[in-house]
Length: 172
Image (cartoon, rainbow, N blue to C red; front, side, top):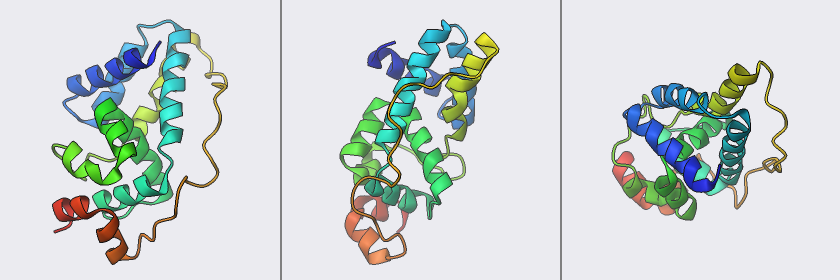
């Protein structure tokens, strides 16, 4: 599976789920079950590589603003959700986390921002296809700490300066 096929699966399942992350995860498992187990592992590698790439302080700060607070577990689930939003939103957010203010059409903090189940979709599909747990994917693990300069989440003025568009759209 190449990168284009990975993003096509993400986009197709998001469309079927009408943006609901839990429904998207279910649709993703269904689609992955139609594939060879090796392709499911390829999908998992693509997902995990992007998940690790998004382990950044600046993105965590954006999640903090969007979600009105964001624990480390919530940030894990946010990164899964962000991947589920598709290539344009994901890459745009990595380029400029404050751009999420314009990249996201709608954002309902009751359902958006938490893609925990998306993170388990490939593992679930692989296990259903093979009857065994997915092997190690052979990709480097995420760093122990997020990449970049730490953000003081409790400093409202710092957040306003770092994320002016997000703050204006989601906090005012």
